[in-house]
Image 1: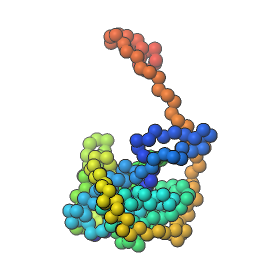
Image 2: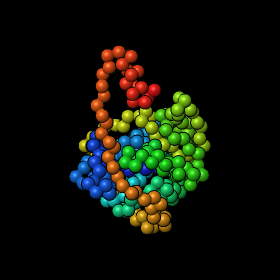
Image 3: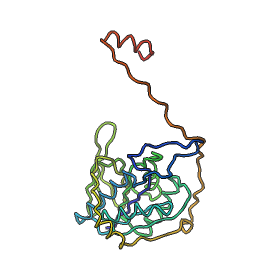
Image 4: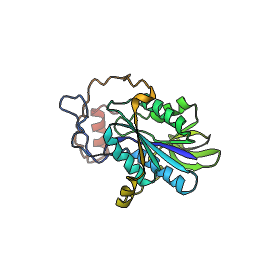
Length: 248
């Protein structure tokens, strides 16, 4: 059984994101970049399934500029078998990404697609759902537990009311949530060994997908600074303050 995992290169989650002075974009110059945390969880889950003998091969895919090689090498060091880098300097919207992933999934004949539930740069939370729709495949989002069998995958997912368990026929698409697992620490020897694994370069033009943006961003702005809180002496004063603020 073969699994496809999509990974994205984003600003590291420990970095405080700042907006450019002209409001045209987010500042990424000289900023630490890394694999999207939710995608890292997806890679870890695929590797664990392979270690359990449920998956025979893991193919990781990233779409973007040349520097995306870094996150692909990290995924290979974690335990993925092969990597595909679809090169482009254009910013891709979720639909374009989903269409390209669909073509790769069909070519690779994968039975399981694992994606992070969202990327921490745009927080779109759309790619996995769009990929499932394009593939006409069952999907389970926000997965907190994955049990893979020969003909189906049983997924426990987090919903507003608690937990929901779904049994999906393969091939299927799953998006991973934070509580699914804790990604392993990648050791230097594994990073060195990953350099010997296959990293295939492909041009985005060969997929024949229209990547023209459907949305336009007018302006980026940082959120307003929050005002400092105050302490109240008793419940009566709390009610007075909330009434003055027209909260109650």
